[in-house]
Length: 502
Image (tube, rainbow, N blue to C red):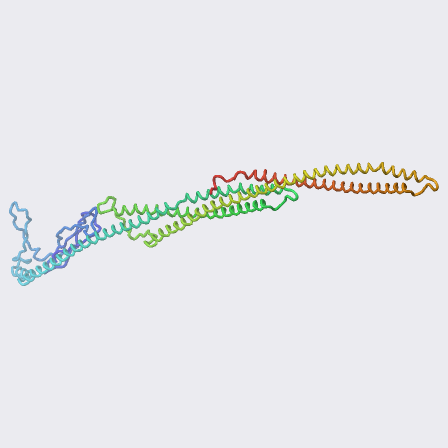
């Protein structure tokens, strides 16, 4: 090889570096070397080297021969640009002896065979170097073409992969967005407010029913009956308290479900924001090309792995969030349906027991009115009977008083006839009649006294009966006042008019 190429990297731009002399010789001659110059390009290509080369002949340092020192200056014509040439003196030697000079010149020459062999070797070496250089050039072109094709193919593949990724992210973004729109928080909040209002409205009927029970406790004596009204009031209170308990349980579940819905909404919103940000980045990356602005080197970025998920885990996460939202949405819909059904059933059943209690109160009031009318009728009859008995008692007393004078007359006659003397004091017919008259009067008076006693006893019975009737009538009037005026007065208007409807 006639020249040797020396490569230097990391040199200053356009800095010439002297190559080390190559001491390898071909037929005793030194081989000049070649040095390199470094070219700094602003954006080097991955297949194009950043060095430029320029051939500069290097002068050997220790390649002086004997003949080179025996030169004489040669005349240079005027005007020639060349330097004077020096030729070795083949006649004169060091000692100015022609024989010695000829002998020295003979030993420093090449033979024709060596000269021919040297030329052949130079030709062969030139052919070999040129063939090898041609193969290298072909390999360089092939490598450059392959690297260009591979680079373009990889860039197309990366762009297509980015497009597919954008499609996947867009699909899941739409799925999550649709699920976020379907996750309606207003319906559950509205039903919670409706249940809270219904629970609050149930306090009115419950208070009225309990107040009716407390008012009916003011009934006295025999009017403290466990009648249909009391049973209806107890049933009404039981139904209202049962629905209050069911409303409280459903409210607790609804509030817990509302918290779960908020958590799902947060997950969906976070996922949507993340996917929108990823879509923006991927769209920007997908639109980048070799001529885009803002391109720069980021050395070692391929070694930095900031990812925290794989494709499967990424899709599984979005799918899990969507499935969880669908599950919570189904639970919310079920709770909404349950709340609506509970409100409707509560309205119907509370209205039914309210109406049943009112009807029972009305029937009970009618019964009390009927009993009150009968009591008043019987009281009136007892009062008339008392008047008649009192009149008969007065007549009996008068009859007893009227028997006083005849008794005195008859007894006076007997006492006077007892003063007869002697034989005249006989038990004659007149005496017997007088004695019979006194006995008859005595019997009559005794009978009248017995009748008077019976009349007075009956009078007392009638008074007692009248007292009982009056007392019972007052109890009925009090019970009627409680049921008709107090209880039915509180229950004339249904306290639930706007919230619970059926």
